[in-house]
Length: 299
Image (cartoon, rainbow, N blue to C red; front, side, top):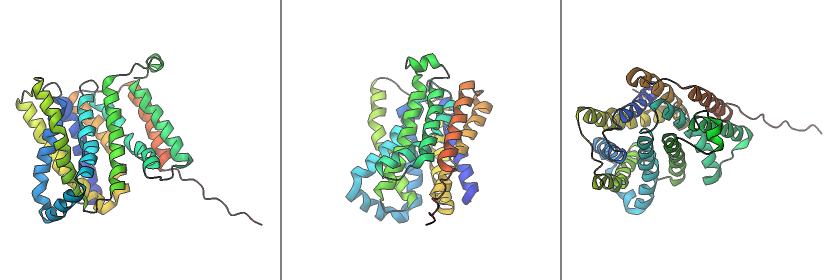
């Protein structure tokens, strides 16, 4: 499976991560869920990239701290924040807010990589940001003026920011090995950074119940929603290119809303719809609208 089918299935499996994490949020602490998902996904994929083990070891010998830092931001913090946020907000809202991450990536690329932003991208970023703020304030102007925000949505905003920063830092680092073995290294690094947070949860008696629901959810997060999802994403990048494969991330928001309705009984709130409209408008301005080329002056 390659190209668009791989990308569509990838984001469908990714949407399932939100559903599984929301489903077991009362039973499993967020950092435990983060650690075990990353560690198990890394263990599943490690044999698949066996031909790259020498290059992976060489990279760790020379740039281990960079690998750990990028993995911590993009996998540990990004996922841990999502799982924290899902304790206080629904999966549908989380999926809509995460759709903002490509716009955040464009803005961060301007400051970290010096990539030009331009008028339409800037305007799109502002419009999308307005949509995100409307969702976080839950459409309540009074709450907005009083800076009273829901903690769950703020965690998800932090996760979207971390994903955008991770994307930019990964582009800047240019580690020089193929994408899938690089992902395996980052999964391992992310699990390593998540471990102390999980141990702190255990120290404070935030233990997982590990009932049937928790085991099934973790199996999904590590297998279909972890290792297979990352594998399919890399396949889609190889075939479609990074830009087109990443743009299909917006399918995740649609899939999350559908699955949350079917499996969790969630519905769309009015503020979700208004905020989503702003985010979509911002995405269109930032990615679709192209500035007109300057016309040469006639002497």
